[in-house]
Image: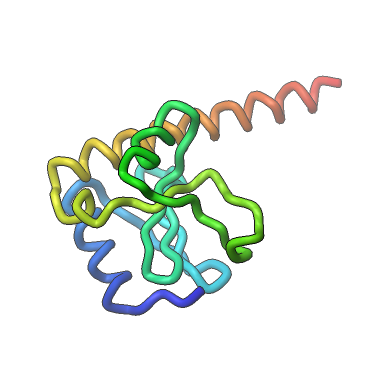
Length: 121
């Protein structure tokens, strides 16, 4: 679960061409935030974006795999590897980042609604 400094810097540089990014080390990887939303993870020198049922097919169509922090037999999280050609193309990257941010925004909104319902009981 290591992230090389060179890959981390490359990802931050590329994403920084799209939106301001904040990076935080977490569990051997790096969590990425844009517009206050946790939308991406770097682990083992692979960039993963947050997905949902509407965006997952984009990743699967490119043959990309889900993030499995506990190895191939462990459960998959709702993050998928970003194709290298997307990371290299700022126009495509802008679209993919926008979708990942939208997924993160929806997840945060759903989570906060659930908390409000729980508190009212």
